[in-house]
Length: 68
Image (cartoon, rainbow, N blue to C red; front, side, top):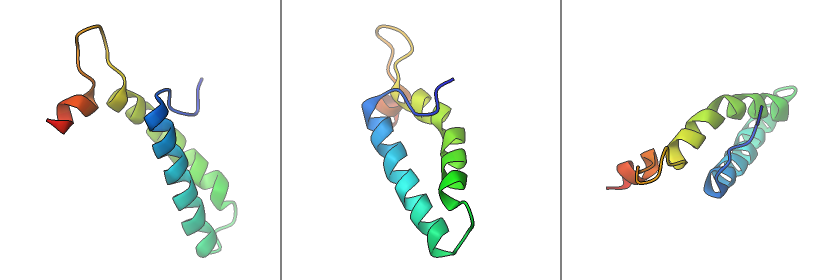
């Protein structure tokens, strides 16, 4: 199993969201905020992969479809 997204842009989104969620959880003194943020983002990882990865040659990724 992989806990981070495969495409590079998805990894940047993952890292940015992880930093923001960790900051918010620490701001409200939630114990284990960084762990909770990581668990939440691990649930979103399959969606980020589906959003950015092309299925087969010639098909567009979900992100390319949304951009148009």
